Length: 136
Image (cartoon, rainbow, N blue to C red; front, side, top):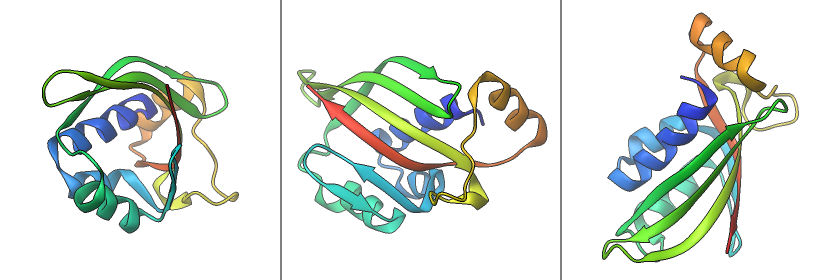
């Protein structure tokens, strides 16, 4: 899976309530920095999404995805409620690494379009090491 596809799969898993699939996309020491809180650890994040988030009747509408040469995937989109009303816009910044590398400084980020081709060619599994969310 490419870094871009990994980011898209993150939203698909959340929106479908597929929490096992979501967990499989995250490094064990995954960290999500949100405007309202920081969630540390894959298990803690999945528990929050499954049991504690303020609204579960939402869909992520992705407007643009960009992978930069530094190993980050940036996603611009909108969170829409079950009634179709837009709740807010967001920009998410993902750091995606090889599955065995986690989110520590020792892990190497997957870089740019060369990395997308390389990961598909050699079959490496990618995970989301960390995520920063910005909202408007």
